[in-house]
Image (cartoon, rainbow, N blue to C red; front, side):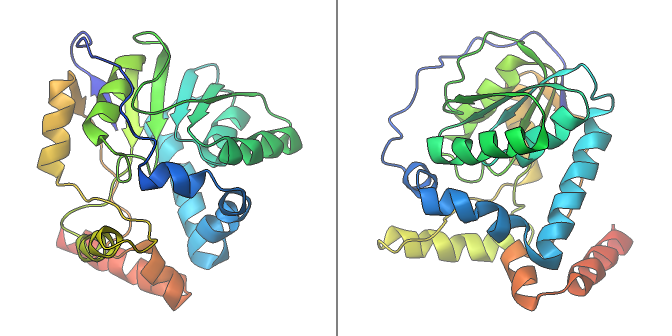
Length: 245
């Protein structure tokens, strides 16, 4: 989680030419949208991811009720719905109308109000400091221009920006290299980038934010944990990692 240390920097919010980027096409797919929740949060590891995500968000935000929060890259709306249930005044943005259709349906079934809008994380159509908190999960790792996305998050947030990313010092670095190489030769795969803590800290400083807290979760890629099919390896790795810190 990061918080603001100085006034916002002026940014050029012109949208990049990202229509051909793989992430736009991949998520603009009804079958992908309809199956996303089960693929991402199904099974024991998916359930662990969902519960941990909810707990970490709640701890980092603190008071949720009546706060204005935006969820950028909301997908099927899991984080947005959880925060709306806590009493937040929620706005949620995604580039995929197919994903938003699922999110709107889930919100109606849950009985909460979320202002869902189609939009691009590279060029958010909101004024400076429009929201108390900006949340952004599983976006920076896939975005065409992650620095522009980061700048937009920091621009529209009054107090806090909460986001996640795969670490360059975890096993995700190996998987990232493999997927990017496979994608480069034309195969269909969900390629992503990894980040160092130094890179993230430096970019936040450029946008007048500072790191306030960090939560480390999985050392190995989630897909590997899911392939194993049990929470025990994930718990064991996290315990060993925490003891070494």
